[in-house]
Image (tube, rainbow, N blue to C red; front, side, top):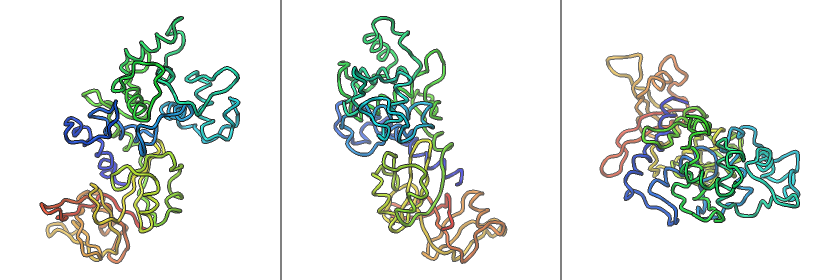
Length: 371
């Protein structure tokens, strides 16, 4: 995978930051607590792997779902499994998909059960429970809130701006998925207790100069690929985690995993991050308006500049299109020292420029993979 590809994959997030400054540039779903930068917040949380970002954002979140979000937002994310060897609560069996997350939350006091040894995993999580969870993940404990745990926790939650863009005053309010996106984004912007370090660093993210989360480092540090998959079985074989709760993008748009499986019926190029449980797929859809596109074919010709007969400048596939080789990595790959020659089959990942009519005027190779 080329360095340029890492930068471009992550670049969509940077673009979203600048666009969010102008609310009119976006259209939003009508959630009561959605803000002008909600689109960017959602992308960051999706990139982080804390929660999936497709589906109904107004859907309420269960205690079991929130437990998994908490663990995925913590340093324990790397040891999170789908099942647990121990049944900590009577109503959460060891084979439950949330069992391991619930066990970790219980062991560290981030979430607690009820009398009778039950966790009530299907009950909706309340603002008070969620506030406690993120405060404890930040390093706070019961000792920090004296005898009035309930009210002092909520006061600290507000003091740290963990309530930014959520807007609920009632601690018993039940949180939606959009609330959780705002809550965990706010968590990333907080500094850990007794530290000058932003919590975002726990997930390999950084802060921008204007105090927002810059998730570009996540993609740079954890990206794998490319791989070419021409059926759904190969998609599952390449991706080392379950796509059921992953953040999936097809041609730059957030989609359910089924869209990637369908596109793989022709072929897709896959990139993924195991750390953030995110998948980026690019299809052979010629009508795609994504900033990255793919083309598969045989190398018909390799072109060189007249002034430099050792460094190739472009390559032509049997689709009749010419693709510019702008980076030294791509130039080397198609040079006499590289692995690719005329007659070889290749899949090119490229960026396209369009003219006023929307037709592609130039194509520049970002990455490649031999199928």
